[in-house]
Amino acid sequence: MQRLDIIMVAALAGLGAAAVYTVATRFVIVGQMASGAVGQSVQPRAAAAMAAGEPASARALYQESTAWIVALTWPVYLAVGLLADWYLRLFGGGYASHEARLVVWILVPAMMIGAACGVVDSMLSMAGKTSWQLIDVSISLVVNVGLNLALIPAMGVVGAAIAWSAAVLVNNLVPLAQLWRAFGLHPFGALTRRALLAAGLLFGALPLAAAPFGPLWTLAALGAAAAVWAVALLRYRAGI
Image (cartoon, rainbow, N blue to C red):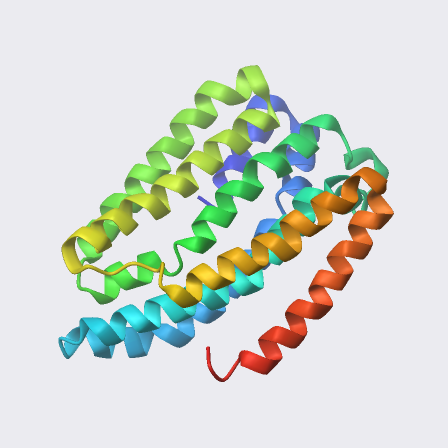
């Protein structure tokens, strides 16, 4: 799931396309690092809660950890999406192509949805459904490979981005549905909803409102949003 698409782009569309695709998708790593760190911290407590038959505690842990994941990742994803050209030029002017921008714009919403699902894989595993987890990941891999084979020859890196986005959605939404239906666990508590709304307004609506005045205004709006966000997280971190 993480690297196979790069190999397939290289094989089916050439090394130049693979280089562009690799650069355009690097922002995903930042979100994965944040999600992985939060997931590692919550797994032991979630496992203990599930083993003790305390679904309310497990639900609270799931929702609180999801709020943190959204708070840490959505600002990055939205900033990269809004300033895609600037992000791509960090790696060299030649990477700021139309196809690379499309890759970013396709992956950003998929990764945001994945972040909003929280540590859904870990929660399914902690609930003792590792076989379900294996099946879900296998389905996602089949979707990824199948769409890559179908789309890369015709669409290049854009096809690879569509394939990865589809696999990410399957790998998050399917286990979320299973977890919700079987155990009544979901990440959309009041805290998560507030994080989603606040991040969307600060890093989405506010910079979009400034966008007509030029990219520097968008950057300034994102900078102001980041300052407000950092203060808010520091102030309320204990409560979260």
